[in-house]
Length: 257
Length: 317
Image 1 (spheres, each protein chain N blue to C red):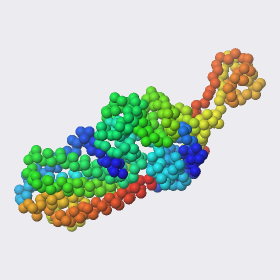
Image 2 (image 1 turned 180 degrees about the vertical axis):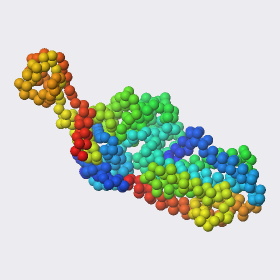
Image 3 (image 1 turned 45 degrees about the vertical axis):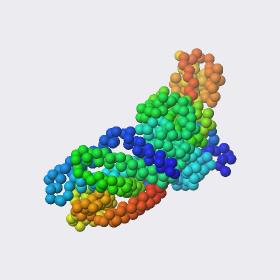
Image 4 (image 1 turned 90 degrees about the horizontal axis):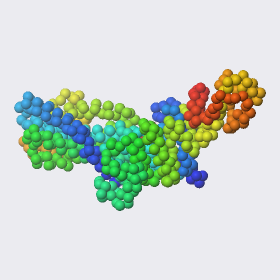
């Protein structure tokens, strides 16, 4: 079982490192979000906020990239089922749980590699980042990434018999960018949006990373929504629920078509 | 119990109805495959070939009936079934970004033959020896460490086949393996498969559109609309269905016709004439005295038989 999980995870990482277009492509969104959206908002609206808006967007994009990249990797598992190596995994005498765990681990590592690029970019354009805050983030980066993977399993298992999984997925993901306040402060929201924002899993992923990064800084109270305990509780509980329920549905439906 | 009769595959009253469908995609199908034989499943698109192969390879659940592969029930012991089969899918299942060796290594680890290792140099000697053997068999010793995307279509297929042999499967399933290959690659691949079959004593289960590929099988099964419409040795299927005939002609057609009518042969046409025969046609030709200008003995191909079976079946609907 460990063998299979490691193999599947290792393959994902190898694949990423060999595929230069994919590496470059994975930097484009964060760079647009931080470089274009972040800097323009900072220039035009950021003055009266009392905190550096670019740093705020950077940490948000970090959470969003980790969450999204792992989730999308899991969704691709269903899409690829009729193609390339996924067929090879599904026909092997290994449990479906190993496939999902290996895939989540692999996509987590992939997304961690990807945020390395985002970090380099942030330093190049001179975002004033605190090294101590970044170091504190390391364990939580994995937590958020696994959370994204669990969310991906949940979505995939419910769309498993549809080819459209990857077409529906953006609609489940894109609104969360704004509901979770990746680029936008979300302290005051109209009621319906407030409810949606509190439901969106990404909200807690973004808030968790901001909690950890801004811990002990003067800006802390201005950028963070909930206590770190609440964020961790939500992320961990939902991760487990999504994984268990999602995997159960996936395994049950996989052969029952 | 299934093993004592030399059957490696036993399909018994198999029914498959997809969840959202109102008809059976596979409708009460029974057949068996003998150990070490070459079995072909033929049928038009949508006949149920892919559904059957998905069930036999444990990827799809059964609605009714039982399927046993190498003595294991596909519903109850899918892991055991998977350990005993190799599958070559219609779409190549190689990872194109990985090298040939990595593709083989990952397969070997997924089948629990060796512990995982991120690099070739750390793999056990036994594995390296095996890879060298396989590479030689396919003739890719030099390309072993090149990404698979640089390989030709025929080469990729061969690599998939050697990869699937590493865990010593008892049955090799090939789902339209030569689709998209040029004639020479097709020919090579077949020669190679026949070699392997003899060397490894493996059972081959083939689905194909190219009927000439099935011509060499020990047993064929033709399905249409989810039902078996014909089965047997290719020779028998052909003979049962299509009568052999001779086509002949002469300058003096009147004389030839009169001669043939005197023997009470079943003659069609006004020249050239077509007569159906049972055996070689030798006896018929010997009896004729009119000088012939044209003579052709028609031996039906499997394709002729197939077309007739499928068209007949359509007319019944």
